[in-house]
Amino acid sequence: MFHLMFSLPWLIVATRFIAPLPWPWMVKLLLAAFLLLASQYHLFSRFTSGSVFAPEFPRPLVIGFNLFFGAIVLLAAMQVVLDLVSILILAVKWSFPVVPAEVRYTMGVAALVLASFGISQAIRVPPVKKIEVAIPGLAPEFDGYRMVQLTDLHISRLFTGRWASAVVEKTNALNADLIVITGDLIDGSLDIRREDVAPLAGLSARDGVLAVPGNHEYFFEVDRWLAHFPELNMRILANDHAVIERGAGRLVVAGVTDLSARSTGSLEPDLGAALRNAPAGAPIILLDHQPRMAERAAEKGVALQLSGHTHGGMVRGLDQIVARANNGYVSGFYEVDDMKLYVNNGTGLWPGFALRIGVPAELTEFTLRRM
Image (cartoon, rainbow, N blue to C red; front, side, top):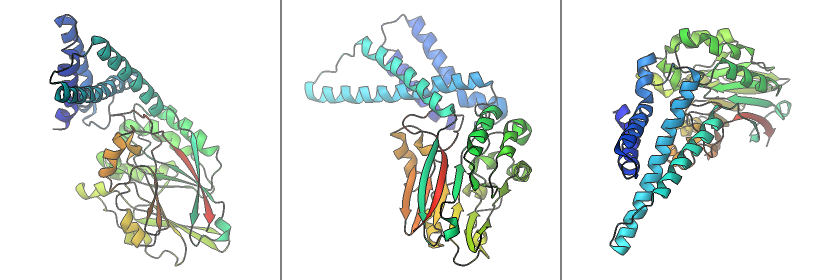
């Protein structure tokens, strides 16, 4: 079903875009065959690594697959719009319009250009996004406290160790008080990704690096990864919390495991356990990879929840579909009762569909302020 779903855009392009072109049939067949191969990117990924989530091709080939697969998806969307317009014209004029070949050529070029732009935006090291957030009950000692959020790094054949090193360098240059990572650090097994993920050990902040797992960790021997991350100088908050002190002031940073744990037999998310024995009256910041359980966190008195997972929807317009799968949360700030929820667009992206159009990646610095 997964591969059938990803074949549908190719079917639209082959029957509604390529077939009507005024070209020799052999040329159209060759183009359709080439795009069919590109549309099966995820199937080939399964052959190379056993998982659609970790393509193990050389990086230029991963980029090429994303380029043409992305162009197919964009072109299919354009073709659907063209067909809908043609149906409207048919309803008014009682005749189906003839679409000039030049219109299809323009669509094809536009899809390739947009896909090229989209992948260039996806694979760059993102710019720093600076945000100030007011926290109820924040102690004076924490006014101005700076915290960097990284999320959805998806370190892989696309987001390699070299890319990770550049992210670490840019993060460390901020000289933050704390670094938090809200899941989906990797795509691939520990044996395959060990070298690529190694640069994360260089992350440095005065109060260290706190992290929670995302759903992708559960696709690749999550217990081995959760045992390895502390070797990279990270503290994993698996239904646990850390207390940060500045003079008499205290700040609680809690973290839960991902909802995917329920289907893998791993430790399920338990916010009650994460907050157990936390100092009363101290503001709570929660790290939860997925945003859709934010109401539960608000009921527990969390002041600020930081999440990722959605990638911001990746493409403007697609974000509305992604929001529906995440209780309406997809990108930026939300007020959930008395709690603030921030859904980060992600520092990296799943290498299976690495396009960003109108939804930029983030390397996010929060400055906490007293209310």
